[in-house]
Amino acid sequence: MNKSGLPRQLIVIGVAVPLALLVGYLLATPDRLQTMTIVGLVLAVLISPVLLHFHYPILLFSWSAVVVVFFLPGKPDLWMVIAGISLAISVLTKVLNKEARFQNVSSVTWPLAFLVLVVLVTAKLTGGVGLRALGNETFGGKQLVFILAAVIGYFAISNYRIPPERIKRYTALFFLAGLTAAIPNLLYMAGPLGWRLFLLFPTNFALNQAFDDFALGAADVKFTRLTGFTFASMAAFAYAMMRFGLRGMLMAQKPWRFVLFCVVGALGLLGGFRSAVIIFGLVCAAQFYFEGLHRTRLFLVLLIAMAIGGAALIPLAPKLPLSVQRSLSMLPLKIDPVAKIDAQASLEWRIEMWKILVPQIPQYFWIGKGYALSPSDLYLSNEAARRGLMKSYELAAVSGNYHSGPLSILIPFGVFGMIGFLWFLIASVRVLYINHRYSPPQYQNLNTFLLSYFVARALFYFVGMGALSSDLPFFAGLIGLSIAVNGGVRSRAVETVPSATVPQPDVSMLENQPA
Image (tube, rainbow, N blue to C red; front, side):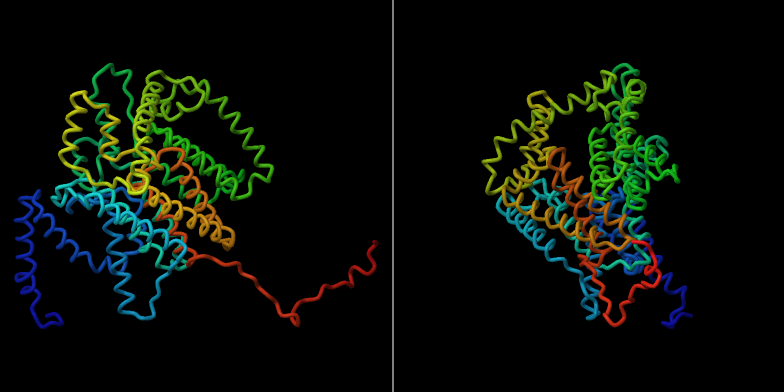
């Protein structure tokens, strides 16, 4: 007998068995929206005790994890769902507990609120929010959902002050969860038995492997791009830099750290992204500066080491895997023509698209184009591209995939969207710099890396390839984590000692010393 006075067998027969039968019946038609909704609600009820107690570490893990919620319409990323749940639990806790307080950094809150206002007003003026997964007549709302979810996630992360004893554990969850990006590539290598797990892990990281297997042409000119390995290596690189700092990675007393640094960087090149080389370089340069290493002898040592490494790479470059050669194609090295032509074609593809987009900026300067897409226009564009009547970059422009950070703001949201985003970046850099400058020693590596990582990715967003909908979650997560770790914005601690207790110097030993 339990506390309710009902036999346990009666509860099992009256509740659990009918529920199991209902779920089993629904799973016979797994593609129906009703089935996915009911099964999702049942799972939510079952795991609600875990979420109530561990929602915050789950949020930090999900923020960088490459996992999708397959049973919800549109298959949203896990972090988007957990962000909403975590913020709802935090608000409920505040309502029930009057002593609970939200951390609020107004200098970051206001630009985010302004940016959301611009996004919503633009959506209202340009056709609303179109979500194909919910049966809307217009498409294109997924990018808007990413932006709103990023803002929700920022408040969910930043409102909680991480206790000092949990900072290492929680920051490790935040960064190392990105290692899951390599799982899709590994699942594809495992063969059909592992492909069932693609329900949880998106297939887009494994597409290049599939394209290589089914591509036409000689086998010796194919090359496989393990794109997930690039993102996974960036996660490992971020954790190592956060934990040890650049100075600690280069310590002669612990050479294994430098070996780890080189191995992680090499794995990151397997994705074939030139942007990986740029981001690694920008992060290291920013970290080098903010750690003050440019004022030490290490600066000269690194210059010599880079010169030696570059010289050693010249004869090795043509023998490396083609995906690695593609990543290094921006450097003055002799590489395989296949990798070089593929990289050059990708760059020319983007330049041609930008040529047709830049003249559109005055048209959408004040009121942006928004994200709403007509399904008829999208269908006709796909058909035109398939028949060779439209270039592939024109199709990407129609769908809003501009491959440019500034254009991804100016065309959809106009000048006001750019003002809001720049305001947010400047406010965030200010907060990160203050937390870095006045950080206690035990958190110095973490705060310095958060600043370096944010600044490097912001520079790459404007001079490289960025997208507001995919990069805003990254920026919001970093600044939210900094606020959570430091309890907001740190202030300079000035310790004063009362004059009556100030120890006086002992000059007795100096009286007989020669001048």
